[in-house]
Length: 603
Image (cartoon, rainbow, N blue to C red; front, side):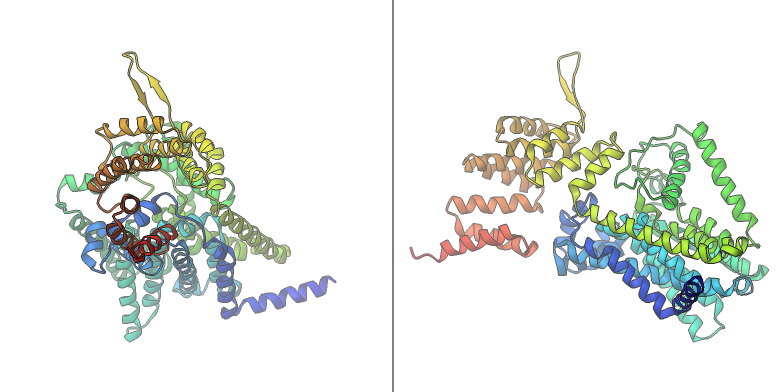
């Protein structure tokens, strides 16, 4: 029995060594684990970046429109604009593109690792097992690990996965250019490397570390010839300088000024640079914990800010990171793969986890690219490190790797299933991060969409508090979005007086942006509409449109006012305009059909 099991295991390993079989397994794994996520709704920034973004739904196909909106991320937003042309606001098409990007990233991981194994310092060191299976194992871990989900299933985080795709493709092209003799083939690889680098940088700015990644590959995997090292270092420094000048140009800053340095290296001034860096020391270990033990994943973390670099928590975390970097140095020539994997992990995190303060200190999608570094380490450990040390248990170790991959795959499938239910996803988030008030706001919003206003209101009330001041005035800590959702909840509960009270308070608040004021006016119009006060409703909708002309809801509702007050031609025109923007909106389609039927009636 044991002999038969060993025989079949060896046959399976032999079949798995074939590249077509490996690529087929990678492809099937992605579609099996992500195929059921095509109906996952929009979340968080998906609304502001796509569904409520006039640059996307009014795009006329010109480069300048997208450049003015997001020049530094134009490649990513170009893909959203194209998606809209085909799918409008139907999520399926967006998810298909995200999944394809994820799969292509896995293919390039496969290609990159295969290339690294052919470098001078690896060709003699790598065992036959490593040569045959490491590209497949690393690519498989990259594709099936549940920590990768947020960069794939959360639509707008295509920016993270697409940037990673170009980053990995650029690295692979660099490696094959270095391995090629001077020829047309080498020139093609160099051209591809430059192209992927530019595409990556104009997708997301965490790819700014690419020049350093090229230098890292040169240092770790190729003999340290002085001339080549000088060229590689020159390319890396030149690349970083070019990145800086491009960024300064996009944001119209003087690249030689301190003002530019300050403005371009922080997303928020609410967190100091030293506190942000100190916090990231802990965040990076949280990411590593989730990489090894992916339990407790959630979409929006409540993470404490560390009070400066002198905090004991920051010092302990820093010691841990220095120990890992020391291990990477120790393995520099002894085991290039381990050294590269660790250094790459920190390098790929450099932009978002260092001294550039970002409002949200932790998000899972930021680990999508850096995780590749530790997948390389884990792959080496499973295929060579442990089997060499425990040779008698070699087959058991390989079996354990298969079991781990199946467990990870199961967790990914289950996590994607949770993303399909926004109420369940945000309830899970609140359980894990109860102090993160945004979770209550968004859960309330989804409860409203499910027509559960009483539950929504109770949840929304947990997102802030009302304070009675000493002078008798009342202030609240509710966010604008929370108040908007509370207005909708009160409207659904027919408590119009309370809803209007919230709206009136918001409209006199000087800190509320015109975009949000337009939403309050739209909701006021909806309340008047439900009470058949059509003139007041029309006035409110017109105010909303005046504040934010691109708003879709106010314009669609104004068309309804025109219809009920007998202005059918105006109603038809406005509904038709809305249907061009959102052709899959069944309510608009039905309303337009009714208006046209009335227009066709004999007078």
